[in-house]
Image (cartoon, rainbow over all chains, first blue to last red; front, side, top):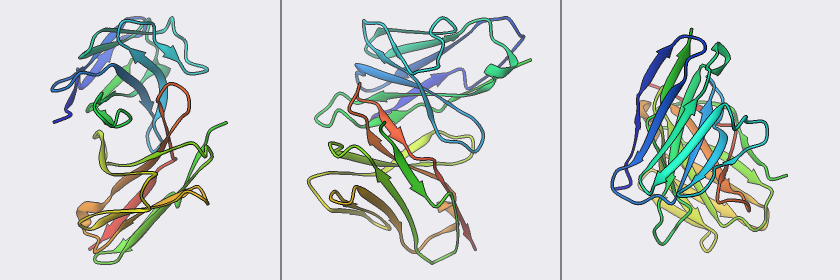
Length: 117
Length: 112
């Protein structure tokens, strides 16, 4: 149980294009999903918290117009990197919170490696 | 602000030895402390967690201890094996929005 999928697993795009990443909870309903960014040999940096049916809450310093988040259902959240540039190249990981008895447990997706040329 | 400090940043042990990773947190209201293992290029995987109503939890070769008074918790791995080599992250919940605050990570290397 508590499986989270993410698609695509990797993507290469040209500078200026937009990229959409999907995060799905496969066997549970996730009222809250989180989006992280991770640079090599560094910790997980939270970008935003996504709640189903409401606007995402962005961390300080994260541009909400650049990183568009939509959480349209209890099993799907999407992150769109708009007008991507080389500095946006990174490993993006989502997590979903299991809405069970212990609602603070987070399960991670496999991540998406984004390379912007 | 809320903070989680993790030490050491790197740890090298011989196969069969024990490994200990320590974390301290700042929010005294925190009540849930997970540990994640992340292999290179893979997702962080929850390996064990502890809640504030217990002081220790064990799962085979892995154990976590919690000292709420001192606001620190530790991961203990016994009889280490090469497949334990990975980066380990501790975390504690933020009082805002249900998010987790992660430590900086510990790169564990188990040498055969």
